[in-house]
Amino acid sequence: MRIPLLLLTLAVPAQAAPPRAAESALHAYVVSRYAALDNELGLASRLMEEARAADPAATTVTRRAWDLAVAAGDQPRAFKLARSLVAAGATDAEITMTRLADAAVRKDWAEVAVLRGKLGRQGWPLVAGPIIDAWTAAARGDTTTALALLDPQRSQGFMRAYVAEQRAHMLAWLGRWDEAATAYRQARIGGGVAAMFLRQGQADALAMAGRRDEALAVLFPSDRPTAAARERLLAGKRLGLLVTEPRQALAWLSVRLAGDLARERAEPLALLLARLASFMAPDLPATWLTVGDVLGGAGQAQSALAALAQVPAGLGLDEAVRARRAEVMEAAGEAAAAGQLLKTAADAPEASAEDWAGLAGWHRRAERYADAAAAYGVAIDRFGASLGATAWNLHYLRGMMRDRAGDWPGAEADLRAALVLMPEEPSVLNYLGYSLLERDTQAGPQAGESATEPRSLIERAAALRPGDGGIIDSLGWMQLRLGEIDKAVNTLERAVSLEPQDPTIMSHLGDALWRQGRRIEARFRWREALAMTGAMTASGAGTVTVAADERRQLQARLDFGLDAAGAMLALR
Image (cartoon, rainbow, N blue to C red; front, side):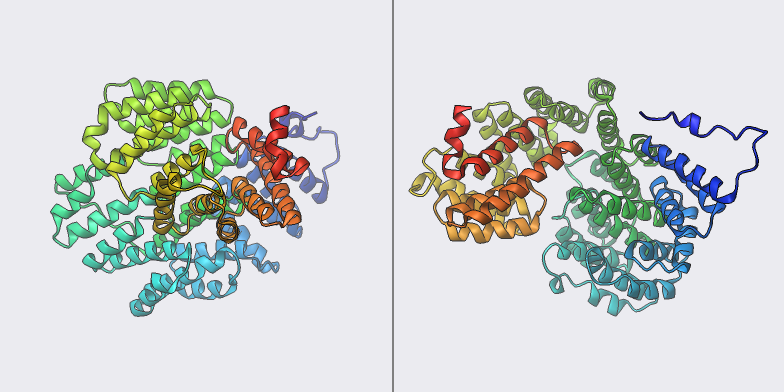
């Protein structure tokens, strides 16, 4: 039974003896933990600080107080407690990064350099380290060394996207506009919250280089934030740098890391980095969008909504913020209120394509796929012509919804329409290729000409985006279906290395290992996949229907083996 929080906070009766320091600390500590369980992060942080003050020698309490100060977004307290923990001997990367953020805000780049050396070179510091080194050098005036450190060709795999983005920021910061414009164009292939801003960075660099017509072309047509940027440029206003000083660059780095870690469900670390981004650059909207996303994913609804409220108006981000607010409200059990928020926006005379896409997303999350497809259809009918080539995404999304609703002919038509608008878009190539392969009843060890188009589509997608685990999974699955078993195992092992927490990819690798005769290893992979689907269901990730179906199929594989699983499922 949950004890009401109010009862735990009642004052000690007047006639009672004054509590000893240890008792007072314990009382505050216990109440703080209850407050945290009730998602009252601000109250939990204050109470934990009371516990720490009552017993300052208790390092465990100080550590918990720091955790809560970070989660609550209390920058002064988080920085102060990090200093206390370092004085008590803390040397882990999370505390060190907090101290580094503190130093960056104070522009103490000598201290940043010292702290960078203490971060280590394992895990996420491996990605962050060279970028921190580069901006430390730049802040000290050594731009030659800084740019040499931000050479994408010296990086491998997913790290290249981080470095490419930061190089673009630095070139623009240095006023090397033509180079910056090229670098931003190349960096835009990445994803995440920052991606929507990179186009504006490219346009600003082009405009500053005297290439205004090219800048306007980059900004048209597209989403609402990009349209707002175009309006500013047409009005003769400067778009402005994405990075005006090194602390903002480190905030962009933290935003990118937080987004990627959140997708891997590494929530505590993702929240730390998102909050540190907001500490270093509260003036960047991307930091608050990221904090809101991570807090929402962690079930901290009120804190997430408070973070999203920090995003300034007038930047074309209203629809994006509204959609995020709706997702947070849904996760908090307020699905009807979230839907009303989105319906009101979509029905307004000034509604945009993003408003209808937001409503479609609400239907999608409730597995009302036909309704989602209809909402995307309204966006296409009303805004598709004015969006030009960027309408590919609406066709792609409606195609996926039609597919899930059982309308494959409509889905295929949308996916092919998306490819007409954007012929080299890897996500569309992959989805269409994988879907055609799945629907080709002849695809298998003896498949012939019928698999030619799916193979071409998937191989093009993999060549365009080799670091995408989902696309590499499609490539391996195709190879398995076509009887190229050894190739499939190698490819699917690569896919798992890129997306180690994806149960579908893990299951596919198990299937390939089974076909290769490695039965024990196959069962091990299936058990891993089954555990992942259970974790996804518990955390609310994915849809209930899809997760339940995956679990049934995986359990059948474990019970009967791959060859008999399908037949045994059909008998149940």
